[in-house]
Amino acid sequence: MPPAAVTFIVVGEEDVSITRELPGRIDAFRVAEIRARVAGILLEKTFKEGEDVKADTLLFKIDSAPLRAANDSAKANLARAEANFQKAENQVRRYRELIALDAVSKQEADNSESATTIAAAEVLSAKAELAATGLSLDYATVVAPISGRIGKADVTEGALVGQGSATRLAVIQQLDPIYFDFTQSSSDLIALKKSQKEKGNVTLLLDDGGDYEHPGRLLFSEASVDETTGMVSLRAEFPNPKRDLLPGMFARARVIQAIRENAITVPQRAVTRGAGGAGNVMVIDESNHAQARTIQTGEAIGDKWIVTSGLKAGEKVIIEGLLKARPGAAVVPEPFAPATKQAAPTAARAK
Image (cartoon, rainbow, N blue to C red):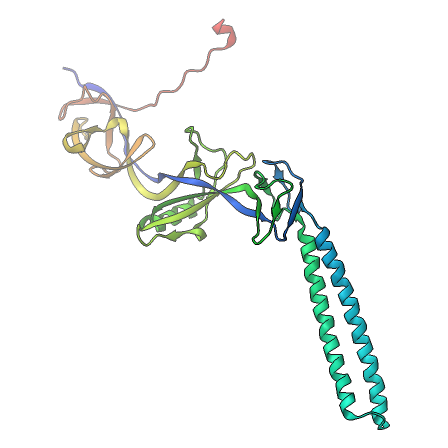
């Protein structure tokens, strides 16, 4: 039989990225629960459920009539307290003049000084009461604390809210950017930090199998280790301008777990498996004879295996013609040339 014609590649070293796909859940960037901070009847809801709202947008109106009355009463109390303080000060001034003439007793002068101090304290108390009633009056108008998407209203117009507890009215979630929370082994954390420092991006895989169009980044400041399981909780941040990602969705993150420097790789099509799962390849020696070689493989990177032992850089590995090449037999080697797609025919040729 004539020597078999085979094609080969020359094994080389390269830096490869080892990736992992880790499951997790989408979480909102910020969440704000809108609650009633004063008691009253809910008069109006001013937003459309499910829409995006800006910070400080009016959301609810609570009946403010009782609160306004309390505020007016506080203003009157302050005016009365200030008048009493002014009266006490005037009396002290007169007593000081009279005591110099021995027209009043020292006891009466001391009493007038004490009355002035009490009047000043009453002014401070009235100011505090006015400030408190003013805050309650402001709280009757409920606005959005953050920008985001607001959900359904938890109460309707006419309901009594804030009586005894801060009634939840609605929830706002900021969806751009958005978080993706997942876990992995804490033993891989250092290698993960190093690889992310060099590469930087995280890819999100959606339920339909497609890649999310915007790359994300890992937030190692959010990392925490569970003492019972040894798993580390990680968080990635992704842009979400179209609001395609929603809190509670499940997804997978493809992260670069480690960088393997100067790794020996070989195409998967060149490797056959023997008993026990050991890998086998055919190499071409210096005399153009095929030789069988047992190798150990590690992670799969695309269409290649990382070779941990059994091969070294510069050796020729047979890609095509494996069935015709026999161990120890001569071969006619040619460098492997990947097939290229034929150019699409022009409209004229197709016609």
